[in-house]
Amino acid sequence: MSIKRRDFLKISGLTAALAALAACRAQVPPNLLPTATIQARPASPFSGAVGSTSDPADVLISRALRRIQFAPTLADLAHARQIGLDAYIEEQLAPGSISDPDVEPRLAKFETISMGPLQLSQVDPAHKPGQQLGQAALLRAVYSQRQLYELMVDFWSDHFNIYLGKTLDRYLKTVDDREVVRPHALGKFRDLLSASAHSPAMLVYLDNALSNRQAPNENYARELMELHTLGVDGGYTQGDVHEVARALTGWTVAGPRSQNPGTFLFNAGNHDDGAKLILGRSFPAGQGIQDGEQLLDLLAAAPATAQFICGKLVRRFVDDNPPPALVASAAGAFTKTGGDLTQVMSVILHSSEFKTSLGSKIKRPFEFVASALRASGANFDPDLPSLGVLKRMGQPLFGWETPNGFPDSAAAWITTTGVLSRWNYALALAFNTFKDTHLEPASLIPVPANNADGIDALSLRLLGEALPGAERQIILDFAGNARFETIVPALTALILSTPAFFYR
Image 1 (cartoon, one colour):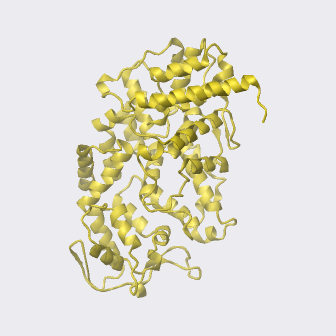
Image 2: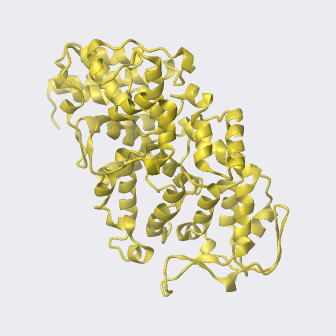
Image 3: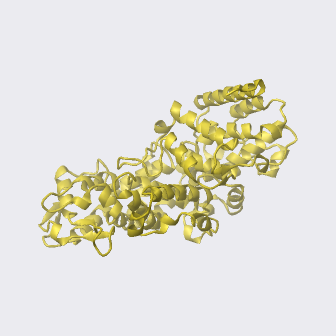
């Protein structure tokens, strides 16, 4: 492809600016100062059109919202500043009280997400349910006002990971998302655990649907304790794994010739009805399906479960290395409330550790894409281009093959390939390369008096605050004396490519 000299110089300048921004990653620590010492550069007079960065309380709010949302809009920031951060957190912890009129009409085109298992099994092409499930997840992340709830759905989708590529799960995962994860994301953990244990998608994924008294399958039994409840160091033995597998024999999925194909079925004839000993507890003979229910009660109430679940939640919402004191406080709330996830999250999000950690968590690809779309206000109708981007970034939605879910640490995502993929996405979004996305540069901010004011205003729009000094200077140098309106796409791409935007 031939390229004009002017375009070549423009591309070269962008490349140089991106390389300089990447170097900032090592120089600017991602973690923030304690709340009492947060300092912000005074806003320029122009930046008042989109918000203020001069008040440390405003800075704290913008950074906190970047942690508990995919990205805050200007309206979100204004609302949080009006009612205060603590009140805003509590509001987000009660998603049923938040009006969300923009989402359901947008979801209407994805007809498979409301289908039952029999209908889903007959959809042609067979990959359509999984594709629409991913599209719906992206749409909700971008447009829902229940942002914390959607983050919790994402968290539990990983915790109870199910791979779409496993036989019937290409469509059963749609039912699992609708009937297991979403209804219980901020409910009681015991209810969520039970819903997952009865989920046909889970029983197929971890082979329990094939388990019977002659040949108990231990796959689900092991992951139920190691990944879903107690944790790898939770005090269970291989003997416990075998006994749990026995307790869950007969927990299967109704076949295609049954009255309700694709639904949970307890096959009493395939259940091992003998006595069992699990984690030191006796399970009497002849209990039938009650073996499984007693097991779920035992696992949900175990102290190791409280510690493991809260450790993962703190890692997700606070730090890659969960502060032990906060994990202990959250585990105390978990135990005291019978696993009430809303109360546990309230302890975590109101903690001092949460406030002083802001900026220390890297956005995973799903969060990065959703945050760029939400912050920029792009018109987004999710389709194959955006799903393909997530696949190239290493996070195909519902596409993690092993049961441990996508990794939740910076080291897994901030690699050379990972950073380059984010740059490519930021450039493609800003220059309208994707057929399912349209960003109107002129809609981002009013035309400024000068480039410095424009960069500050654009930073406020996309980040909720001004850029750190080094990153701002790199972008200011790139802008030079160019007319602002001609370089808005490039500036947008650069801000979305800063270390400041990569972190939450």
